[in-house]
Length: 513
Image (cartoon, rainbow, N blue to C red; front, side, top):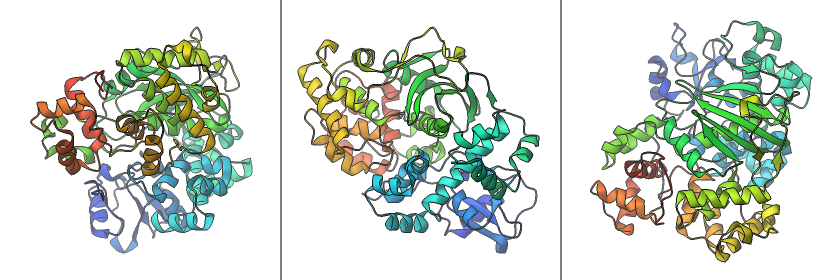
């Protein structure tokens, strides 16, 4: 089924609508498109507070910052267009361009180059370049470069990190490349960027890098924290006093993050084994908390439906994601047909027995007090570890053990892709081909591990009960037909239905599934 564009989505080909958004300084469109002002040579977010309205003949709209930079424009110093939340379009789209954008955000080009990105998407470099140039307005290299430039700006302006450390944290391969890119994109040297008054919002201690992560309002943090607390295995994550602390398995080593939602941002303290993993860590936290979501679009789509009352009562509800697709797939399997508490217990046993310990994680120091250095931390086991593991001591049934082993081997063999850039439709088919995985499990994995915003796990009995409570059909086929009208936000619809029965945590996986 073809998805209906969200209400606030606007094509850059619709010049009049884009220009009206700029005239009204409508912050709802920040991140959806970029405004290029050709007469000044700068690009802005739609809500840029500049008192001078650009003349229509001098304006050109771009789908990404990278496209604006490729056209020779530099970032506005007033509105900082790259600091807005990412476009929800790249989470929504299941095509090649959307998959590529998610992998670029996860740092794949920085790690493996364009060849690695093309290989991960099973296309030629030429095809990849052609598609991205057409759909996004920039090449893979330009997109990765724009991402590095923004990461650099945030770290320069909000921390006291040395420029050499910032260069590698942002993904640059050399200090010279870092300096040249910052000057070209921002028309300022790194030193000039740092010296500007900006109300420093980040920090760096001997043991952690602190950053603000933006989001679109409204933002309901409590259900997210409750979901994480209820579903995360011990030693892997915990929630205390409104802060999530958890481990991260990153490309260059382990990491820890402390996540604290606040009124207008999410504060994160990262403690990493390698500076080069910072951008990847930020990207994964954004996926975990669904920070690039557009709740206005979701609300406008669902308000005039039978869900309207429960959506209006709980605005800003997000879909909990994951920092690791394999981790989410395994925890979903161990949660099949058991209570949330039992699923968490099984997951905790797996982490305790097979997860790698994280002793000291540092950024040139050893102060991990923000994470509670008295607490034992572990990384979630790798596919290689679980493929050969004796799972019997965990108490899982033989069938569950075989399913976990089979899934782990499928990941190792390349028969199953659980990364951010996976082909969602193909991955669902590959999951259903594995023993012990049915439609409900495949749907939950697609929703959380792959970040698909348009999944409706109709096999969930509690979901159908919640639907019946508001006058919808409790029959699976009829409910599927009714839910088609809620596309492309059916994952959010499911969470609103779950939350109507279990307000905390929203999106739980109840027993009778």
